[in-house]
Length: 174
Image (cartoon, rainbow, N blue to C red; front, side):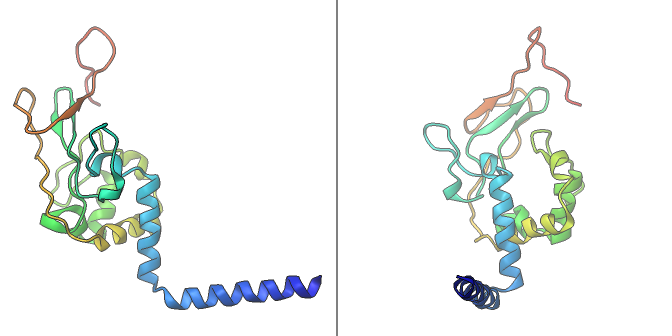
């Protein structure tokens, strides 16, 4: 019995050694980033939605086709996160980490309130860099996504409306 356990342990270590030798550190980092993007639900906003309104993560992080109306702020669509056309995947690792953890884009603008960067501020440096590695590894896709629309302007694509409970007046954004 002990011999069988020993043989299985040796075999497991051999498989791990063979696997770790065939995958680069960058591939492991990007794989960790893909996992993080999945559990952080990035596709909920940054992927198109199907006819039933459900996100289509299999389409990739090419940008959302259904926006979010934020009272007093306007309507925004989740941008394309691939390296195409200045998407977040084209930013440097440091710029992506800064945006994820502080809510500040490379151009100095703040991310919109629906982007949960305050929750992501707790990411370890290694995890934030892994997510950056994943975004930078995506195949560039020139999927056009509407820009932000000011309150009262006509929307070029469908959107969800965020409505706060109460007297009908929008709750101020903090």
